[in-house]
Length: 230
Image 1 (cartoon, rainbow, N blue to C red):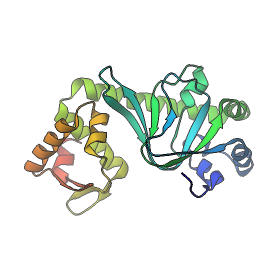
Image 2 (image 1 turned 45 degrees about the horizontal axis):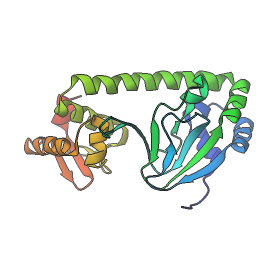
Image 3 (image 1 turned 90 degrees about the vertical axis):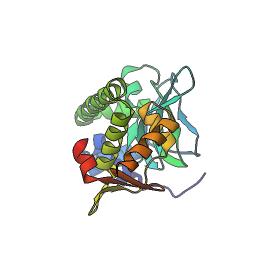
């Protein structure tokens, strides 16, 4: 897979933990990163591998997954916006990777090695604080995912997942909120910890009630649905 080289410095500026850096610091960081390209369904990092690098998404989509004993895939998170990053936790604690990351489509990533990341952290206490804030935020999100799986039935899990997608990717319309590029039902099943067939049945019931309208990958969430589950 090949593609245009991203504007690395501008991309780094969009990474939350580097947003505070000045032009000179960004230029120094730019010299430390490597460009990596991964084909669709390709492995970015594997669970239990040594954590040797931080990755920044330049183009494409990547999913963070765990696999159950039965082989069922549980999607913990999807990275899809340029500037999304992952892999920082293993760099900080020295432990192996806690999950697997797979490219959902042909993707381009920046790779910042453990040595380069440590070098940058030693020179920038502001970045270290930003990393701590991001880890705290992701821990809170993980708590929400665990509570979602443990406490809610499938309709509640789907409602919460759709509400989160509406917040992050939705567009206001006269009838509610539109998500134009909805994840596939298999991907939603992974996010919810259930089967695709169960997701399909839940969508059918929500559609029957007039709460959602699904056309291909375009989903309209009615305002009363958002109000009921907001």
